[in-house]
Image 1 (tube, rainbow, N blue to C red):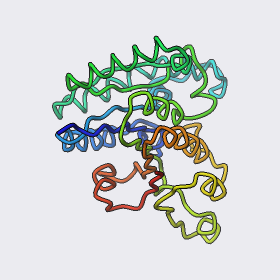
Image 2 (image 1 turned 180 degrees about the vertical axis):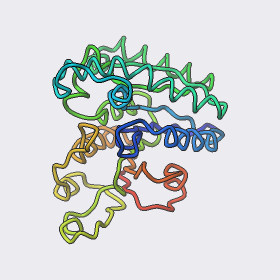
Image 3 (image 1 turned 45 degrees about the horizontal axis):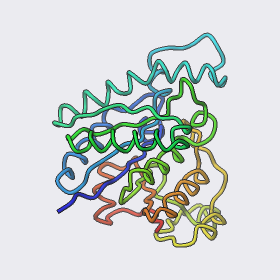
Image 4 (image 1 turned 30 degrees about the vertical axis):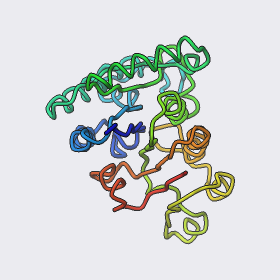
Length: 253
């Protein structure tokens, strides 16, 4: 029986567990879940976190908010981030590979074909592709979307079954419940226009995305008939629990 394909998008807030450094425990938690599911699912990861990884090791003599400083931090942090993935995943018998993409890669058919062919070979040979935007030459993720759009475009290109966006909330909450300070998760969504009316314009503390960028990503996935799940990645075993419907999360179909 063919395995289902999941694209897992991990934002900086999930990977740092809302601290100022990458959480090895969280990456181990993700690896343990992938190891437990590898007979039924194949995984592709889109991972932020390069800048957060760099800040553990360096402080540049410039304004951290300057886009070129952020690009430099991403360049420093990316190999550290991959090393952390490698060390934690290899202990679980999982192999990883790095793929750096830019949005321009999705505009040329030859580039798209190359991405699909390369990632299919990796997955077939039991390597987990870990994708990030090539921040050294591109600024879209730094400026705009915390890799949500990149994850959706990649999910569409690779024809995945489920796009799981890990965030720091139990999915998307109703506007009224947030106002009443008792957040209530919207569990199932068919109409994205109705969903947009429920969200605010909040940004995440480490990343650059908010719920708006996640809904836009879900729109790309929906057009390609891919389900999007917005799940609280701070929970232990959040993938396993979501697949068993044991935690509240938002499913967009």
